[in-house]
Length: 181
Image 1: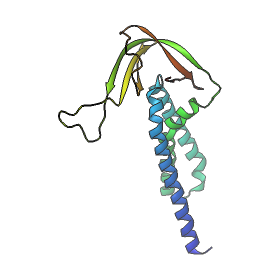
Image 2: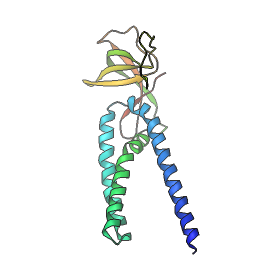
Image 3: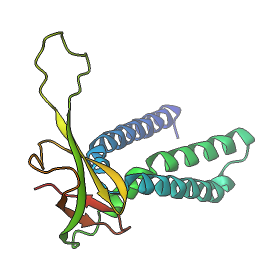
């Protein structure tokens, strides 16, 4: 095989890997909206990280026979463990929401507060009127304080301690994702 063809193959493989990495980063950015409205999302993320670490170790263990030198083995182990662990929360969140047949149902929770937030990459000028970019909604579910995010106020007339209803969709792993109307 000519050397120029081998170089071309490596360039194509490198380009595909870079595009895949950028695609995963974009998917992660889009998934943050779902994480913000997943009840007990921290638990899902931690368990996904542990699963990703275990998957990376098992994958490295299986692939180690294809490398001969110690440097190749170190690259393999580091790459497999880091990539599997890094993208595990994304895959875990996707997998939790996979079954589309699961219906949306209502749950009753205790309302705590609703606060507007505004974010600007470059800050605000003095005296500038600041419009909220969204709202943080704090609720108690099963005695645990949860923070949700919404683009508009959802409970403007509700007082602290009142019961409110949320539309949620329970995922395959049991984590509920709030679906705003």
